[in-house]
Length: 445
Image 1 (cartoon, rainbow, N blue to C red):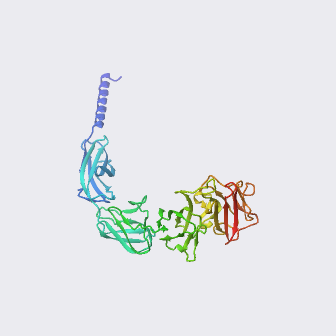
Image 2: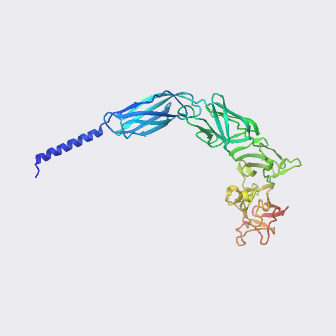
């Protein structure tokens, strides 16, 4: 048996040693920063490099070194470096480039922390200046680059022969020893740093004109949106879609401005006709309409309105009737079939009170041998015309009843019949007898 006195001494020694270790672990430590970089000044947009020596006088293991940059009292940038051992560490902190921030002095803080959360902090004043670039570059959507020369402090201009519409972003050269290439693009209808989304520059004409950009306030020009109908400027929906709401009268001239190659656009015969001089005349009855220019497909979508909302069919037969389904599409089935996508629903032209029309060309805007579309009360699911409310005497197109090859109200081409490819057909929906007594007529022109 061991001597109990010796055992007690050993136990007491072990407890004392363990207590010392715990005490050592709880010691706060004394982190030491030795900054080896002189922070003289920097430019907005820089990646500022720094080197810092780190240690702890109490030999407590270190945890992190943080570089924090403040504009006034706002933290705008931070770099975190893991400090696994004492020694020198090098890192970079980004100097953010924002609009309308004047030259001034920022605050740079270096924060060293050990594993016991003891902190040592040093603060430096860092004078900042906005770069005065010798030039910037406009990068167009087709990757063509236009050099924008400096024309004044923060002002840049490219003057050359441009198309009327120029989509592109702006980039800068790297500036100074620590500079980065910056980009400016289109975000939520405004120019924003750090983006390469295309800015929709536009002019009233193609040819020689100037595009400008200010690197301080991000003001740019031109945004003359040249797209207008009857002298009302169209609103931009996206790069390829513009729209305008107008009150229009039957046979009223429709003047479209700003469109290049308008003669190449498809003109919907239900809504527009040309007079002897080639001018467009509005064909439906007087009312409020939304005209949307689709630059991808080069045609104008026209939809009836009730106030500022898309029109729906009213109980008295006024309003609008919409087409959804298969085998029909504008400007062609091949490029833009409606299908069962409600967002593509076609608005029939209201040509008279409670009378609606759509003109189609077999093989182009309607398939010649197979259709399966129907009439709806709105641009979407909801009210619709079934065979209980719709009839026709046409020998070309029939109304489905659920047992004749089409769902109730869906239209089909009669068995043994086809539409003549290239021929024009006018489908007219007459609601003068009531919405539950709709009559469809089909006339070949």
